[in-house]
Length: 534
Image (tube, rainbow, N blue to C red):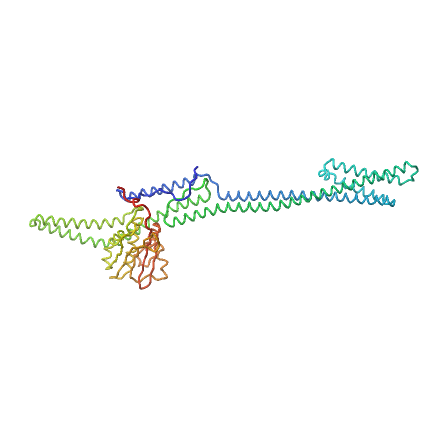
Protein backbone atom coordinates (compact mmCIF):
# COMPACT_ATOMS: atom_id res chain seq x y z
CA UNK A 1 0.00 0.00 0.00
CA UNK A 2 1.36 3.36 -0.97
CA UNK A 3 2.28 5.77 1.74
CA UNK A 4 -0.51 8.36 1.77
CA UNK A 5 -0.54 11.70 3.49
CA UNK A 6 -3.17 12.38 6.13
CA UNK A 7 -3.97 15.91 5.19
CA UNK A 8 -6.05 18.14 2.97
CA UNK A 9 -7.38 16.56 -0.21
CA UNK A 10 -7.38 18.59 -3.36
CA UNK A 11 -9.80 18.47 -6.19
CA UNK A 12 -12.45 16.52 -4.26
CA UNK A 13 -15.87 18.04 -4.35
CA UNK A 14 -14.60 21.38 -5.63
CA UNK A 15 -16.47 23.39 -8.19
CA UNK A 16 -15.09 24.93 -11.36
CA UNK A 17 -13.55 28.31 -11.15
CA UNK A 18 -15.74 29.79 -13.87
CA UNK A 19 -19.45 30.16 -14.19
CA UNK A 20 -21.29 27.46 -16.12
CA UNK A 21 -24.42 27.75 -18.22
CA UNK A 22 -26.54 25.64 -15.86
CA UNK A 23 -28.69 26.23 -12.77
CA UNK A 24 -26.73 26.82 -9.60
CA UNK A 25 -28.88 24.38 -7.71
CA UNK A 26 -27.53 21.65 -9.95
CA UNK A 27 -24.00 22.78 -9.23
CA UNK A 28 -24.77 22.68 -5.53
CA UNK A 29 -26.16 19.16 -5.75
CA UNK A 30 -23.13 18.05 -7.70
CA UNK A 31 -20.85 19.71 -5.16
CA UNK A 32 -22.60 17.96 -2.29
CA UNK A 33 -22.35 14.61 -4.03
CA UNK A 34 -18.66 15.31 -4.62
CA UNK A 35 -18.08 16.13 -0.94
CA UNK A 36 -19.98 13.02 0.17
CA UNK A 37 -17.94 10.91 -2.25
CA UNK A 38 -14.70 12.52 -1.01
CA UNK A 39 -15.66 11.80 2.61
CA UNK A 40 -16.49 8.17 1.77
CA UNK A 41 -13.20 7.81 -0.15
CA UNK A 42 -11.31 9.17 2.87
CA UNK A 43 -13.19 6.78 5.17
CA UNK A 44 -12.38 3.74 3.02
CA UNK A 45 -8.74 4.79 2.75
CA UNK A 46 -8.49 5.22 6.52
CA UNK A 47 -10.09 1.83 7.24
CA UNK A 48 -8.26 -0.14 4.54
CA UNK A 49 -4.94 -0.21 6.41
CA UNK A 50 -3.85 -2.88 8.86
CA UNK A 51 -4.70 -1.90 12.44
CA UNK A 52 -1.89 -1.51 14.98
CA UNK A 53 -3.47 0.21 17.94
CA UNK A 54 -1.69 2.84 19.98
CA UNK A 55 -2.47 0.83 23.11
CA UNK A 56 -0.66 -2.16 21.60
CA UNK A 57 2.35 0.03 20.76
CA UNK A 58 2.46 1.35 24.33
CA UNK A 59 2.24 -2.20 25.70
CA UNK A 60 5.05 -3.34 23.39
CA UNK A 61 7.26 -0.41 24.44
CA UNK A 62 6.74 -1.09 28.13
CA UNK A 63 7.21 -4.83 27.55
CA UNK A 64 10.56 -4.15 25.87
CA UNK A 65 11.59 -1.98 28.80
CA UNK A 66 10.49 -4.73 31.17
CA UNK A 67 12.47 -7.43 29.33
CA UNK A 68 15.50 -5.15 29.14
CA UNK A 69 15.29 -4.49 32.88
CA UNK A 70 14.79 -8.21 33.54
CA UNK A 71 17.90 -8.98 31.49
CA UNK A 72 19.89 -6.47 33.51
CA UNK A 73 18.50 -7.88 36.78
CA UNK A 74 19.39 -11.42 35.68
CA UNK A 75 22.94 -10.35 34.81
CA UNK A 76 23.26 -8.66 38.20
CA UNK A 77 21.93 -11.72 40.03
CA UNK A 78 24.38 -13.98 38.15
CA UNK A 79 27.25 -11.61 38.96
CA UNK A 80 26.17 -11.52 42.61
CA UNK A 81 25.99 -15.31 42.72
CA UNK A 82 29.47 -15.58 41.22
CA UNK A 83 30.83 -13.15 43.82
CA UNK A 84 29.19 -15.10 46.62
CA UNK A 85 30.70 -18.30 45.25
CA UNK A 86 34.12 -16.67 45.04
CA UNK A 87 33.79 -15.35 48.59
CA UNK A 88 32.72 -18.77 49.84
CA UNK A 89 35.62 -20.48 48.12
CA UNK A 90 38.04 -17.84 49.38
CA UNK A 91 36.73 -18.40 52.90
CA UNK A 92 37.27 -22.17 52.57
CA UNK A 93 40.77 -21.74 51.18
CA UNK A 94 41.56 -19.18 53.86
CA UNK A 95 40.40 -21.57 56.64
CA UNK A 96 42.44 -24.34 55.05
CA UNK A 97 45.51 -22.13 54.81
CA UNK A 98 45.15 -21.00 58.44
CA UNK A 99 45.03 -24.63 59.62
CA UNK A 100 48.09 -25.52 57.52
CA UNK A 101 50.03 -22.49 58.73
CA UNK A 102 49.11 -23.29 62.34
CA UNK A 103 50.29 -26.88 61.82
CA UNK A 104 53.56 -25.55 60.43
CA UNK A 105 54.05 -23.40 63.53
CA UNK A 106 53.56 -26.40 65.82
CA UNK A 107 55.85 -28.34 63.49
CA UNK A 108 58.58 -25.74 64.00
CA UNK A 109 58.02 -25.82 67.76
CA UNK A 110 58.51 -29.56 67.66
CA UNK A 111 61.74 -29.25 65.73
CA UNK A 112 63.00 -26.56 68.07
CA UNK A 113 61.65 -27.72 71.41
CA UNK A 114 60.26 -31.17 70.81
CA UNK A 115 56.71 -30.10 71.72
CA UNK A 116 53.27 -29.48 70.09
CA UNK A 117 53.43 -32.40 67.68
CA UNK A 118 49.94 -33.47 68.69
CA UNK A 119 48.71 -29.94 68.16
CA UNK A 120 50.15 -30.00 64.63
CA UNK A 121 48.31 -33.25 63.98
CA UNK A 122 45.07 -31.73 65.26
CA UNK A 123 45.39 -28.76 62.85
CA UNK A 124 46.12 -31.13 59.99
CA UNK A 125 43.02 -33.14 60.87
CA UNK A 126 40.98 -29.91 60.82
CA UNK A 127 42.44 -29.00 57.41
CA UNK A 128 41.58 -32.49 56.15
CA UNK A 129 38.01 -32.09 57.45
CA UNK A 130 37.71 -28.76 55.64
CA UNK A 131 38.70 -30.45 52.37
CA UNK A 132 36.32 -33.33 53.01
CA UNK A 133 33.28 -31.25 53.98
CA UNK A 134 33.68 -28.89 51.02
CA UNK A 135 34.81 -31.47 48.51
CA UNK A 136 31.95 -30.80 46.07
CA UNK A 137 32.45 -27.04 46.04
CA UNK A 138 36.23 -27.30 45.83
CA UNK A 139 35.96 -29.86 43.07
CA UNK A 140 33.63 -27.58 41.07
CA UNK A 141 36.07 -24.66 41.31
CA UNK A 142 39.50 -26.40 41.35
CA UNK A 143 38.51 -29.27 39.15
CA UNK A 144 38.87 -32.97 39.98
CA UNK A 145 42.65 -32.99 39.39
CA UNK A 146 43.28 -29.91 41.56
CA UNK A 147 41.13 -31.17 44.39
CA UNK A 148 42.76 -34.61 44.26
CA UNK A 149 46.24 -33.07 44.35
CA UNK A 150 45.45 -31.02 47.47
CA UNK A 151 43.94 -34.11 49.06
CA UNK A 152 47.07 -36.14 48.39
CA UNK A 153 49.24 -33.36 49.81
CA UNK A 154 47.28 -33.14 53.06
CA UNK A 155 47.18 -36.93 53.41
CA UNK A 156 50.91 -37.18 52.85
CA UNK A 157 51.55 -34.43 55.38
CA UNK A 158 49.25 -36.17 57.83
CA UNK A 159 51.06 -39.49 57.30
CA UNK A 160 54.43 -37.90 57.89
CA UNK A 161 53.24 -36.30 61.16
CA UNK A 162 51.73 -39.59 62.33
CA UNK A 163 54.93 -41.44 61.47
CA UNK A 164 56.91 -38.90 63.39
CA UNK A 165 54.54 -39.26 66.33
CA UNK A 166 55.01 -43.08 66.27
CA UNK A 167 58.75 -42.69 66.42
CA UNK A 168 58.39 -40.35 69.40
CA UNK A 169 56.56 -42.96 71.42
CA UNK A 170 59.64 -45.20 71.87
CA UNK A 171 63.34 -44.67 72.27
CA UNK A 172 65.46 -44.65 69.14
CA UNK A 173 67.58 -47.78 69.54
CA UNK A 174 69.64 -47.77 66.37
CA UNK A 175 71.10 -45.54 63.76
CA UNK A 176 68.57 -46.58 61.10
CA UNK A 177 65.62 -45.34 63.14
CA UNK A 178 67.44 -42.11 63.83
CA UNK A 179 68.11 -41.64 60.12
CA UNK A 180 64.51 -42.48 59.43
CA UNK A 181 63.38 -39.71 61.78
CA UNK A 182 65.70 -37.19 60.12
CA UNK A 183 64.38 -38.22 56.69
CA UNK A 184 60.78 -37.68 57.87
CA UNK A 185 61.65 -34.30 59.30
CA UNK A 186 63.24 -33.15 56.03
CA UNK A 187 60.33 -34.38 53.95
CA UNK A 188 57.88 -32.85 56.43
CA UNK A 189 59.53 -29.44 56.14
CA UNK A 190 59.62 -29.69 52.37
CA UNK A 191 56.07 -30.94 52.07
CA UNK A 192 54.70 -28.40 54.56
CA UNK A 193 56.37 -25.56 52.71
CA UNK A 194 54.84 -26.74 49.46
CA UNK A 195 51.38 -26.94 51.05
CA UNK A 196 51.66 -23.43 52.46
CA UNK A 197 52.83 -22.08 49.11
CA UNK A 198 50.00 -23.89 47.35
CA UNK A 199 47.43 -22.44 49.80
CA UNK A 200 48.87 -18.93 49.42
CA UNK A 201 48.76 -19.32 45.65
CA UNK A 202 45.11 -20.38 45.85
CA UNK A 203 44.28 -17.38 48.05
CA UNK A 204 46.02 -14.96 45.67
CA UNK A 205 44.31 -16.48 42.67
CA UNK A 206 40.87 -16.38 44.27
CA UNK A 207 41.38 -12.82 45.48
CA UNK A 208 42.21 -11.81 41.91
CA UNK A 209 39.14 -13.69 40.65
CA UNK A 210 37.01 -12.00 43.31
CA UNK A 211 38.32 -8.59 42.31
CA UNK A 212 37.50 -9.36 38.70
CA UNK A 213 33.99 -10.46 39.69
CA UNK A 214 33.51 -7.26 41.71
CA UNK A 215 34.78 -5.17 38.81
CA UNK A 216 32.52 -7.04 36.42
CA UNK A 217 29.54 -6.49 38.71
CA UNK A 218 30.42 -2.81 39.00
CA UNK A 219 30.65 -2.52 35.20
CA UNK A 220 27.32 -4.29 34.82
CA UNK A 221 25.73 -1.84 37.26
CA UNK A 222 27.18 1.23 35.54
CA UNK A 223 26.68 0.20 31.90
CA UNK A 224 23.28 -1.35 32.50
CA UNK A 225 22.13 1.87 34.17
CA UNK A 226 23.45 3.91 31.25
CA UNK A 227 21.90 1.62 28.62
CA UNK A 228 18.64 1.43 30.56
CA UNK A 229 18.41 5.22 30.72
CA UNK A 230 19.24 5.51 27.02
CA UNK A 231 16.68 2.82 26.18
CA UNK A 232 13.97 4.45 28.30
CA UNK A 233 14.70 7.92 26.90
CA UNK A 234 14.71 6.59 23.32
CA UNK A 235 11.54 4.64 23.97
CA UNK A 236 9.85 7.66 25.55
CA UNK A 237 11.03 9.90 22.69
CA UNK A 238 9.72 7.59 19.98
CA UNK A 239 6.44 6.98 21.78
CA UNK A 240 6.07 10.64 22.73
CA UNK A 241 6.86 11.89 19.23
CA UNK A 242 4.43 9.33 17.88
CA UNK A 243 1.61 10.63 20.12
CA UNK A 244 2.55 14.32 20.11
CA UNK A 245 3.06 14.28 16.34
CA UNK A 246 -0.49 13.05 15.88
CA UNK A 247 -1.81 15.57 18.40
CA UNK A 248 -0.04 18.40 16.56
CA UNK A 249 -1.40 17.14 13.27
CA UNK A 250 -4.93 17.04 14.58
CA UNK A 251 -4.44 20.52 16.05
CA UNK A 252 -3.63 21.67 12.51
CA UNK A 253 -6.77 19.92 11.28
CA UNK A 254 -8.82 21.71 13.96
CA UNK A 255 -7.37 25.09 12.93
CA UNK A 256 -8.05 24.25 9.29
CA UNK A 257 -11.67 23.36 10.06
CA UNK A 258 -12.03 26.51 12.17
CA UNK A 259 -10.86 28.55 9.18
CA UNK A 260 -13.68 27.03 7.11
CA UNK A 261 -11.70 24.43 5.13
CA UNK A 262 -13.86 21.32 5.32
CA UNK A 263 -11.86 18.96 3.09
CA UNK A 264 -11.66 15.45 4.63
CA UNK A 265 -8.62 13.96 6.37
CA UNK A 266 -6.73 11.33 4.37
CA UNK A 267 -4.24 8.62 5.60
CA UNK A 268 -0.57 9.32 6.25
CA UNK A 269 0.79 6.03 7.66
CA UNK A 270 0.71 2.38 6.53
CA UNK A 271 -1.32 1.29 9.54
CA UNK A 272 -4.29 2.58 11.49
CA UNK A 273 -4.80 3.15 15.20
CA UNK A 274 -6.97 5.14 17.61
CA UNK A 275 -6.07 8.35 15.77
CA UNK A 276 -7.61 6.80 12.66
CA UNK A 277 -10.88 6.45 14.57
CA UNK A 278 -10.52 10.10 15.57
CA UNK A 279 -9.90 11.08 11.93
CA UNK A 280 -13.04 9.20 10.85
CA UNK A 281 -15.06 10.94 13.59
CA UNK A 282 -13.66 14.33 12.51
CA UNK A 283 -14.54 13.62 8.88
CA UNK A 284 -18.08 12.79 9.95
CA UNK A 285 -18.14 15.95 12.05
CA UNK A 286 -16.94 17.94 9.02
CA UNK A 287 -19.86 16.61 6.97
CA UNK A 288 -22.31 17.54 9.71
CA UNK A 289 -20.75 20.99 10.16
CA UNK A 290 -20.82 21.68 6.45
CA UNK A 291 -24.43 20.56 6.19
CA UNK A 292 -25.53 22.60 9.20
CA UNK A 293 -23.55 25.62 8.04
CA UNK A 294 -25.29 25.45 4.67
CA UNK A 295 -28.66 25.28 6.42
CA UNK A 296 -27.80 28.27 8.63
CA UNK A 297 -26.54 30.34 5.72
CA UNK A 298 -29.58 29.58 3.62
CA UNK A 299 -32.04 30.16 6.47
CA UNK A 300 -30.44 33.49 7.26
CA UNK A 301 -30.45 34.37 3.59
CA UNK A 302 -34.16 33.64 3.34
CA UNK A 303 -34.79 35.82 6.38
CA UNK A 304 -32.90 38.62 4.66
CA UNK A 305 -35.07 37.99 1.60
CA UNK A 306 -38.14 38.34 3.80
CA UNK A 307 -36.77 41.62 5.11
CA UNK A 308 -36.23 42.86 1.55
CA UNK A 309 -39.64 41.69 0.31
CA UNK A 310 -41.49 44.69 1.72
CA UNK A 311 -39.17 47.04 -0.12
CA UNK A 312 -39.35 44.99 -3.29
CA UNK A 313 -43.15 44.97 -3.18
CA UNK A 314 -43.14 48.73 -2.80
CA UNK A 315 -40.66 49.06 -5.64
CA UNK A 316 -42.73 46.80 -7.91
CA UNK A 317 -45.83 48.93 -7.43
CA UNK A 318 -44.36 51.76 -9.49
CA UNK A 319 -43.62 49.83 -12.70
CA UNK A 320 -46.83 47.80 -12.34
CA UNK A 321 -48.89 50.99 -11.95
CA UNK A 322 -47.17 52.47 -14.98
CA UNK A 323 -47.85 49.31 -16.98
CA UNK A 324 -51.51 49.29 -15.89
CA UNK A 325 -52.06 52.98 -16.68
CA UNK A 326 -50.31 52.75 -20.02
CA UNK A 327 -52.27 49.65 -20.99
CA UNK A 328 -55.63 51.27 -20.09
CA UNK A 329 -54.73 54.42 -22.02
CA UNK A 330 -53.75 52.28 -24.99
CA UNK A 331 -57.08 50.43 -24.86
CA UNK A 332 -59.18 53.55 -24.45
CA UNK A 333 -57.42 55.77 -26.99
CA UNK A 334 -56.16 53.13 -29.38
CA UNK A 335 -58.14 54.37 -32.37
CA UNK A 336 -57.25 58.01 -31.83
CA UNK A 337 -53.53 57.40 -31.34
CA UNK A 338 -51.04 57.51 -34.12
CA UNK A 339 -48.78 54.58 -34.93
CA UNK A 340 -45.79 56.35 -33.40
CA UNK A 341 -47.68 57.05 -30.14
CA UNK A 342 -48.79 53.44 -29.92
CA UNK A 343 -45.17 52.26 -30.28
CA UNK A 344 -44.02 54.70 -27.60
CA UNK A 345 -46.66 53.44 -25.16
CA UNK A 346 -45.77 49.80 -25.90
CA UNK A 347 -42.08 50.61 -25.38
CA UNK A 348 -42.99 52.14 -22.00
CA UNK A 349 -44.80 48.92 -21.08
CA UNK A 350 -41.81 46.80 -22.13
CA UNK A 351 -39.41 49.09 -20.25
CA UNK A 352 -41.43 48.93 -17.02
CA UNK A 353 -41.82 45.14 -17.41
CA UNK A 354 -38.02 44.77 -17.78
CA UNK A 355 -37.59 46.94 -14.70
CA UNK A 356 -39.89 44.64 -12.72
CA UNK A 357 -38.09 41.61 -14.09
CA UNK A 358 -34.71 42.95 -12.97
CA UNK A 359 -35.99 43.68 -9.45
CA UNK A 360 -37.34 40.14 -9.09
CA UNK A 361 -34.25 38.60 -10.73
CA UNK A 362 -31.95 40.36 -8.26
CA UNK A 363 -34.00 39.12 -5.34
CA UNK A 364 -34.16 35.55 -6.68
CA UNK A 365 -30.47 35.56 -7.49
CA UNK A 366 -29.68 36.46 -3.91
CA UNK A 367 -32.19 33.97 -2.45
CA UNK A 368 -31.21 31.03 -4.65
CA UNK A 369 -29.11 28.32 -2.90
CA UNK A 370 -25.72 27.77 -4.51
CA UNK A 371 -22.45 26.06 -3.88
CA UNK A 372 -19.21 27.92 -3.34
CA UNK A 373 -18.13 29.62 -6.55
CA UNK A 374 -14.67 31.08 -5.88
CA UNK A 375 -13.58 33.67 -8.40
CA UNK A 376 -11.76 37.02 -8.58
CA UNK A 377 -14.15 39.73 -7.43
CA UNK A 378 -14.24 43.51 -7.65
CA UNK A 379 -15.37 44.72 -4.23
CA UNK A 380 -16.40 48.11 -5.66
CA UNK A 381 -18.94 46.50 -7.95
CA UNK A 382 -19.98 43.94 -5.34
CA UNK A 383 -20.72 46.66 -2.78
CA UNK A 384 -22.56 48.73 -5.36
CA UNK A 385 -24.77 45.74 -6.24
CA UNK A 386 -25.40 45.06 -2.54
CA UNK A 387 -26.38 48.66 -1.84
CA UNK A 388 -28.67 48.59 -4.86
CA UNK A 389 -30.23 45.37 -3.56
CA UNK A 390 -31.00 47.11 -0.28
CA UNK A 391 -32.17 50.33 -1.94
CA UNK A 392 -35.85 49.56 -1.48
CA UNK A 393 -35.37 48.96 2.23
CA UNK A 394 -33.37 52.20 2.39
CA UNK A 395 -36.22 54.18 0.83
CA UNK A 396 -38.78 52.73 3.22
CA UNK A 397 -36.64 53.47 6.30
CA UNK A 398 -35.69 56.99 5.18
CA UNK A 399 -31.99 56.23 5.65
CA UNK A 400 -29.26 57.66 3.43
CA UNK A 401 -26.38 55.39 2.39
CA UNK A 402 -22.99 56.87 1.53
CA UNK A 403 -20.83 54.52 -0.58
CA UNK A 404 -17.14 55.33 -0.98
CA UNK A 405 -15.25 52.99 -3.30
CA UNK A 406 -11.90 54.23 -4.64
CA UNK A 407 -10.70 53.03 -8.00
CA UNK A 408 -7.78 50.72 -8.85
CA UNK A 409 -8.31 48.43 -5.89
CA UNK A 410 -6.96 44.85 -6.24
CA UNK A 411 -9.36 41.98 -6.70
CA UNK A 412 -10.32 39.59 -3.93
CA UNK A 413 -10.87 35.85 -4.36
CA UNK A 414 -14.17 34.61 -3.01
CA UNK A 415 -17.80 33.68 -3.53
CA UNK A 416 -19.87 36.64 -4.67
CA UNK A 417 -23.16 35.32 -3.26
CA UNK A 418 -21.75 34.67 0.20
CA UNK A 419 -19.85 37.97 0.40
CA UNK A 420 -22.95 39.82 -0.81
CA UNK A 421 -24.92 38.10 1.95
CA UNK A 422 -22.39 39.29 4.57
CA UNK A 423 -22.39 42.90 3.37
CA UNK A 424 -26.18 42.97 3.00
CA UNK A 425 -26.56 41.66 6.56
CA UNK A 426 -24.26 44.39 7.91
CA UNK A 427 -26.06 47.08 5.92
CA UNK A 428 -29.49 45.91 7.09
CA UNK A 429 -28.25 45.80 10.69
CA UNK A 430 -26.91 49.33 10.30
CA UNK A 431 -30.29 50.48 8.92
CA UNK A 432 -32.10 48.87 11.88
CA UNK A 433 -29.71 50.59 14.32
CA UNK A 434 -30.18 54.04 12.73
CA UNK A 435 -32.86 56.61 13.40
CA UNK A 436 -35.16 57.68 10.57
CA UNK A 437 -33.35 60.23 8.47
CA UNK A 438 -30.00 58.92 9.66
CA UNK A 439 -26.99 57.91 7.59
CA UNK A 440 -25.02 54.71 6.96
CA UNK A 441 -21.46 54.96 5.63
CA UNK A 442 -20.09 52.09 3.51
CA UNK A 443 -16.48 52.26 2.36
CA UNK A 444 -13.73 50.00 1.05
CA UNK A 445 -9.99 50.53 1.06
CA UNK A 446 -6.60 48.97 1.69
CA UNK A 447 -6.35 47.42 5.17
CA UNK A 448 -3.49 47.94 7.60
CA UNK A 449 -2.38 44.36 7.02
CA UNK A 450 -0.60 43.91 3.69
CA UNK A 451 -2.48 42.07 0.93
CA UNK A 452 -5.87 42.72 2.57
CA UNK A 453 -8.83 44.98 1.78
CA UNK A 454 -11.11 46.39 4.47
CA UNK A 455 -14.84 47.06 4.05
CA UNK A 456 -16.34 49.30 6.73
CA UNK A 457 -20.06 49.64 7.47
CA UNK A 458 -20.72 52.47 9.94
CA UNK A 459 -23.97 53.63 11.45
CA UNK A 460 -24.66 56.63 13.68
CA UNK A 461 -27.13 54.93 15.97
CA UNK A 462 -27.18 54.35 19.69
CA UNK A 463 -24.23 51.92 19.66
CA UNK A 464 -23.78 48.57 21.39
CA UNK A 465 -23.33 48.43 25.19
CA UNK A 466 -19.84 47.32 26.17
CA UNK A 467 -21.05 44.43 28.33
CA UNK A 468 -22.69 42.67 25.35
CA UNK A 469 -20.19 43.66 22.68
CA UNK A 470 -18.32 40.39 23.07
CA UNK A 471 -21.51 38.35 22.62
CA UNK A 472 -22.82 39.69 19.32
CA UNK A 473 -21.11 36.96 17.24
CA UNK A 474 -22.57 34.16 19.36
CA UNK A 475 -25.25 32.09 17.59
CA UNK A 476 -28.85 33.05 18.50
CA UNK A 477 -27.76 36.15 20.41
CA UNK A 478 -29.75 39.23 19.35
CA UNK A 479 -30.66 42.62 20.77
CA UNK A 480 -33.63 43.04 18.45
CA UNK A 481 -37.22 42.72 19.60
CA UNK A 482 -38.84 39.32 19.65
CA UNK A 483 -39.78 38.16 16.15
CA UNK A 484 -37.43 40.63 14.42
CA UNK A 485 -34.19 38.69 14.58
CA UNK A 486 -32.82 35.17 14.94
CA UNK A 487 -29.35 36.03 16.26
CA UNK A 488 -27.71 34.09 13.43
CA UNK A 489 -26.75 36.93 11.07
CA UNK A 490 -23.40 37.93 12.56
CA UNK A 491 -22.53 34.33 13.47
CA UNK A 492 -23.13 33.14 9.90
CA UNK A 493 -21.31 36.18 8.50
CA UNK A 494 -18.31 35.52 10.69
CA UNK A 495 -18.20 31.90 9.47
CA UNK A 496 -18.36 33.00 5.83
CA UNK A 497 -15.55 35.55 6.22
CA UNK A 498 -13.41 33.05 8.16
CA UNK A 499 -13.93 30.61 5.30
CA UNK A 500 -12.54 33.28 2.95
CA UNK A 501 -9.46 33.73 5.15
CA UNK A 502 -10.54 37.04 6.63
CA UNK A 503 -12.09 38.39 9.84
CA UNK A 504 -14.83 40.69 11.12
CA UNK A 505 -14.09 43.30 13.79
CA UNK A 506 -16.44 45.67 15.55
CA UNK A 507 -15.99 48.98 17.36
CA UNK A 508 -18.85 50.69 19.12
CA UNK A 509 -19.46 53.54 21.50
CA UNK A 510 -22.82 54.15 23.15
CA UNK A 511 -24.52 57.18 21.61
CA UNK A 512 -21.96 57.44 18.77
CA UNK A 513 -22.71 54.44 16.59
CA UNK A 514 -21.06 51.20 15.53
CA UNK A 515 -18.49 50.32 12.88
CA UNK A 516 -18.10 46.80 11.46
CA UNK A 517 -14.86 46.15 9.57
CA UNK A 518 -14.65 43.17 7.21
CA UNK A 519 -11.08 42.30 6.21
CA UNK A 520 -10.60 39.96 3.25
CA UNK A 521 -7.37 38.91 1.46
CA UNK A 522 -6.67 40.04 -2.06
CA UNK A 523 -6.24 37.38 -4.73
CA UNK A 524 -2.72 36.28 -5.57
CA UNK A 525 -3.82 33.87 -8.30
CA UNK A 526 -3.14 34.49 -11.99
CA UNK A 527 -5.79 36.60 -13.68
CA UNK A 528 -7.09 33.78 -15.88
CA UNK A 529 -7.81 31.42 -12.98
CA UNK A 530 -11.42 31.49 -11.94
CA UNK A 531 -12.55 33.54 -14.92
CA UNK A 532 -15.41 32.23 -17.06
CA UNK A 533 -14.34 29.88 -19.79
CA UNK A 534 -14.51 31.20 -23.25
